[in-house]
Structure formats: C-alpha cells, structure tokens
Image (cartoon, rainbow, N blue to C red):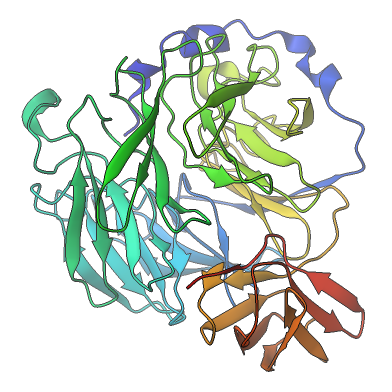
Length: 468
C-alpha cells in the first residue's frame, strides 16, 4: 500500500546499518512492555496509532487480518487485554487512526472500502455505520484518520481523487474534506500538483482556528509541502520541500508549546529523514537529520510530551535482524526542541518490528504504540514504554467556546474536588475514574485545565483554547 519507490536512498541505507547502534541506547529509567501480539485472526499490521477513549481503554485499527481479512477495529485495556469490536470485509483496509467525537462514538476511514474508500462511525459496542463512500470525484483512498474540529464537524484528507486531473494516472491529486456526523461530505479543496499532491496524513486544527497539514509529494520541487487551509477552503502553501530539508512528509504536524509546528519527513536530509520546525508564516528549520546509523524513516511523526520534549519512532534502524523489513526493526527516540536526540528503545523483532505510527502519551504518563511486524506471530504488536513521566489530564476537544461541553480524560479522577480552566472554576460531574464531564465556564480564557483529586492536582498536557 505504501509507495516505497518514493523513498530514494532509504532502502539502501537500511541495508548498511551500523551494528553499534545499541550502544547509543539511553540510560533513562524506563520500562518497555509488549502488551499484545497480533495473530492475524485478531488483526495484523496496525499502521495507525492507538487513541485513548473516555473509558480509559485504548482503541485502534489493523489494516489486515480479522475474521474476514479486511482489517479490524479493536479495544485494548492498559493491562493488555484485547478484544475485537469489528471485522471488516476483504479489501476494506482501515489505515488511519480513529477519533472519538463528542458524541462518544468513534469515527474513521477505510482506504479501499467499495474500491474508493469510506468514512465510518462505530459505537463502543461495535455497531458500524458507513457514513460516506467516495466516488473518485470527491476523493479516493483516505489513508489518514479524521479530526473533530471546534465547529463539531469532522475533517480529513484523501490521498488521491478530486477535481484535478493533472496528477499521474488521472486519479487526481487528493483532497481536503469536511463531513458531518450524519455523513454529509463537502470537498473543501482539490490539490493540483504544484500546490501539493497526495496528502498522506491528516489535519491539525491550530490555535488560530485554521487547519495545517502536509502533502507527501508535489509542490515546487515535487518532494511534498506544508500547507494551511481555512474552514472555507482557502489554501496557502507554506513550504515546498527540496530534498535537502526533507522529502516525503508522510505524517501530520503538531503545534508545540512555543506556537510553532513540528513534523517529520520520511526521507531527504541526509537521505534517511528529517525532523523540522515551521512557523505559521512558513519559515522552515531542520531540527534533526537522521544519519542512518541511528534511525531511518520517521514515518509516523512526533508528539510533544508533558516534559516538553518530542517523542517519535523510526520504522527502520537499530538492531539488525533478518526477519524485519530491510533487516532492521526500528527504534523509539526522545528529541529536545533544540535537536538533541536520545535513543530509548531498539526493537529486536521478538518485541515488535518496524513501528510505523506515532506514539500516544496516555494520561497515566506512559507511551503506547504499535508495530506493523514482529512479535511472537510476525503480525505486529502493541507496546507501552514508561520513562517516569507522571500523570496528567487531557480534554476532548482541545478547544471550545464559553459554555461548550468538554470531556476530561485522566486516571484516578474519582473524588475530584475542583476543575478549573486557566484558573476559572467550572462545574463538573465525575463519570468514572477516567472521565469527567464539564463545560467551559463563563470568564474562562485560554490556558491549562487543572483537576484537583485526592492524590494531587493534575494539569492538562496542552493549553485549552477558548474560542469566540
């Protein structure tokens, strides 16, 4: 499914890995645990990251496997107990991450359902509804997951399709779309090649209310772009990669605490991928360029954790093993905003292989992720990594108007005595140890959400944006 031919020297570099990488593994106090080994029957090849649900469990998809070999939707507890919620038919292939919307249901995409791909809704009990089937003119092959924006609608991208016929094979250059919870889809933009082509990743809604994303190819030099698009569909190309600063940006962006955006390119730089920073005005800086001896192919992008550092995976690099792709199994890293890289874990195949997706930092402080290969059955794994970071709370959504309903996720929330938005007290209801329901209080301003519990005060991992 992935266009490996676009990776240039990536495959070559993987074949000449330096075996001393293991010596670079950091001495951080950490605990790595393989939670689940996929066996094809319960799923195979989870390309997408897991997400944390309001019940404290994790949810995700596998592209292959399941009862009908078309992929699955699964639930897994923090302790590793996994159950399948849904088995897709053959040739559906869900690729992108799920999103849990304000209504409590999960929404996602299949990359090839009914040939062109679909958008679906699934309940916590596994009842699935197809909301939209793409027909080519409105997009094809939605590899990326969706986001729920501050207006309550869902937004996403398709890799191909759309109004333009200037891209190879006349499949179209890809689209940006909006879809309501009832399935009404609106194409906001069709890429034309020079402004970007084949958006592989999903969107980010930034603090300014606009959406930001990447295209994996196209642009001035053909190596991909970073773009901004308004809710009405006005697109601005912020940067066109030239190879030296990155190539094939296959992951989405994160907006860091400094207000800038950070992302990864799977190739380019020194030939093995880059981490970059880009301002809202489009000024791009290369934060780190992988050398090949320490990691290759940061496909999944990065997250900023509660310590202010970024955490990411590379699909290749690390310990050389013949049963992993390109003879290497991939790695997990910590990266400071200044560009200091520290290796945290090198996969050896038995504990998973080739982590493609981004990590998730759970509200318990630990990281969770997936590998598309390796494990006891060779079909991929789900893992956790604890580095000693403490618990926190997060909000769904991350922004909203005064009076808007908000769900707070956390751990050990039972007995909470107060909730505040940037110091302004809010009324609330404790639903469970993992969930609090509240509303943005009158007078609240943008800032951190705090929850006082019997075991201490928990802060949100990012500032809640109060919108107009």
